[in-house]
Image 1 (cartoon, rainbow, N blue to C red):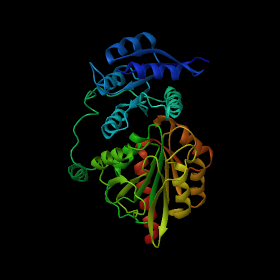
Image 2 (cartoon, helix red, strand yellow):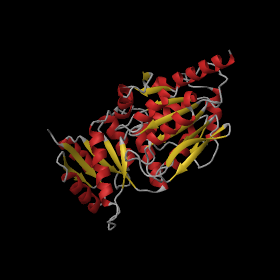
Image 3 (cartoon, rainbow, N blue to C red):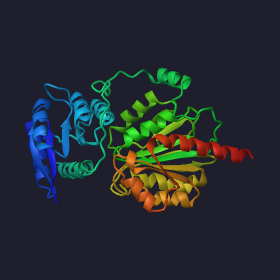
Length: 373
């Protein structure tokens, strides 16, 4: 079997050496070149035709986001970003995912031995996933600024969007049942998939609970970015808070997120319980609680991602009366999680990403009609 060819782009010689060593220790991959800046990288990529590129953001001669935008416009290639675990690094990484990067890993801290094996496992796992990912060509218009364009405040975006709903949104206002809860699980490629769905939901949509595989330090920036773009309010989930319509709650990185009942209300449970299926947060944890707490009031959605996290719990949701949707293979970056949910018999409908929000709202509207009758 041919090895996965990887090019490492980073301005630190120590990081290039470390990543090259980690990659070359794997029997199924090979570092075929390294570059200190995007200009060197351009020539190496042309010569070596890599399957995957690892890319630092902060580099001399050309900003990593600008390089990524050009790459995805002219020569779409799976990219794994190497990001610093800071608020600034999180913002930049989210913009990189918007531009087409498959995933990201934490930048190794030189001189700190603890966690190095975890980093090695993380980077090689994500390179393997990226090598199989479906990457798409970035549109030619505004590619250099797509990830860095200024974003209006959340209020101004909401007022603009509320006045002119997207064509893929429901055509007319719908009075919604406050009992329904939309339950979303995602991993690789999920940040953009979640954004596409949430941006189509009306301000009075049912509550949305989300587990997206992400490390600590990134989910707060992710939630804030979505909150600035969507009509519903988006935030990290906090332990004990009430789950309300018109709001989306994202599992905090490094924590487990589930639902519980408090009288007639649903509330968030955020705790430090162990990883499940190697994930923290885990879709399995959220979906299992949705099966138990929500029953037929849940609408489950499994989006792009590698592995099987959440598949069995989604089957529990279906058995409890939930209606479940999986993203189709053609629109997934990685089809693993939806595929496993489908194989588990957990799914009622398999849909392209662009159609999922509409299907959710149609399901909610139909339930409201039945309730009135």
